[in-house]
Length: 143
Length: 155
Image (cartoon, rainbow over all chains, first blue to last red; front, side, top):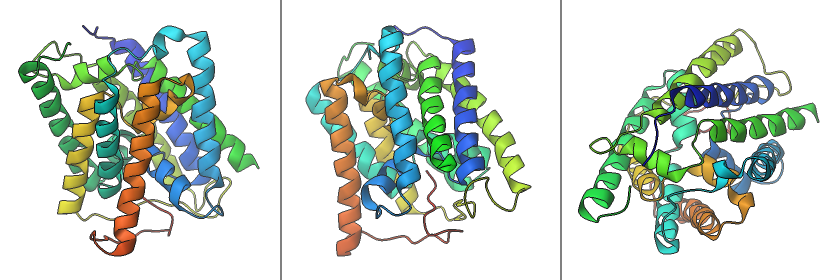
């Protein structure tokens, strides 16, 4: 059971927009998390340091928020370890083939009116919805 | 140095936005994808707020020759919609739906030490390296999009 939270979600979205806009205006980079992670992982250290700074900010804020606001990081609904491994692999491979995820395509790309990002976003929402449908309606996973 | 401090602040704000918006709750993300069930449209409001503010920032950026602390803007310029883009996005969507996690919330929650998150992130980074290795060995089609800077990607 999940409750509709329009105002907190809109506020959270605005903060994400400010965060991504700040990265664009200060570093000239797209705040796409999958791209930043892959870049930090596979690019030579030179030129990757802003990525590590961004990722460290995300990680440390998560640590602090989990302490201050444990309910938001209690992570309700996580799958089994095996399913999490499969899901992670699909997310890793898919975001590199498709050059982006929810942040890079869904936020930055759509705001820049990139047709590629619009197609990617509609595609991953569609296959995500089909996956949840199969999980919940056919395989009986709890909502 | 300033560039790195601002990148750090940007990352921290990003996590704060995810947490405020409820995006660190896999069940809530899955409820957004559950269109035929007990649908929770909250994620659409997260996207709406983020897209509106980012569109404004992008507009501001087009009036500048360069960012504050870097030589140039690195924005993807490719407009090509091909099989690789759609197949990649489709696979990502399946993984997103299975776990209720995408890269941002998973990385934000890594510090909790939750074993499921650790496994998800490790598998995700492994998947990224796999694509990289396949490209390097030539067994995956490498799509070199025209980009304004060598380091630019969509996301």
